[in-house]
Amino acid sequence: RGRVRTLPFAERMNTSLSACSISSRARFSVARRAARPSRARAHASPIFMGPPLPSVELGRVLPGGESAKVTLGVWLDYACPFSAKAYKALVEQVGPHYGKELKVVFYHQVQPWHPQSTMLHEAAIAVHQLGGDAAFYKFSSALMDAQKDFFDANVWDKSRADLYKALAALASSSAGVAEEDVLAKLARVVEEGSLNTGNACTLELKFHVKLGRQTGIHVSPTTTLNGMVCDTSSSWDLEQWRAFLDPHVQAAKSAA
Picture 1 (cartoon, one colour):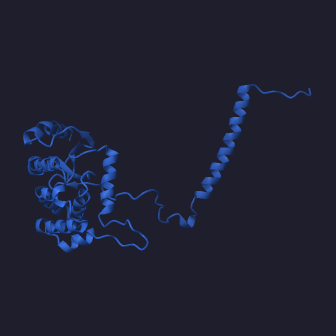
Picture 2 (tube, one colour):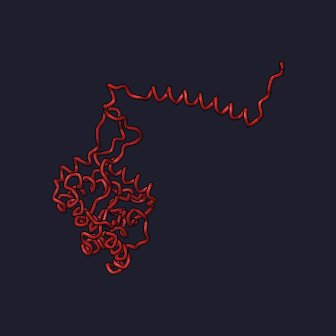
Picture 3 (cartoon, helix red, strand yellow):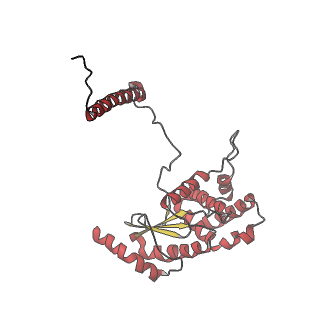
């Protein structure tokens, strides 16, 4: 009697934790009430958080294989000679061989040691925005064929505007899109007070760069099979591609 009872250690800990838990729940409840929208705003537009996100899946699908169960992603740089070899094999041989059984998807892989690469890929994005997948692949084939015109030795003294003009002319002659429309897509966006605004193709190119980093893409060409990076070679011919792809295509058929 008259003594202060000392609680055992475990009991003191439980009491302390219970008090903290009650306090935390109270703060959390208040925060939830503060964050909860009123009835009048229950159907208001959602709040968007973080950087912009693509509203549709990235990548340009080679026409013909849109519904295939097996997807071969290919990350290419228009300024890379090895990318050109891989592109020609995949677009001219592999894609046509498999038809509806293989989805070939082109992804933009800008390599910073080719400074002109950004402008080449921006032009391809502009063509797609104007003419869709078919125009994109027509332009891409023409650009891969003419890529040496855009190698370092041939563009060293050319301005950004010079390159855009040359690319717009190539887009017009190969994909049938108006040269002035391509140049309009590549023109700098003017916003008062802003200096680094890019053009109408900048955001989409940023999405590809971000996706490549998230996927672990470092160089071109790099391929992915159903989303996973895989070992392939730009020097493969159709028979070598078949040796790699046939087992997966057959397995997808069996699983249907």
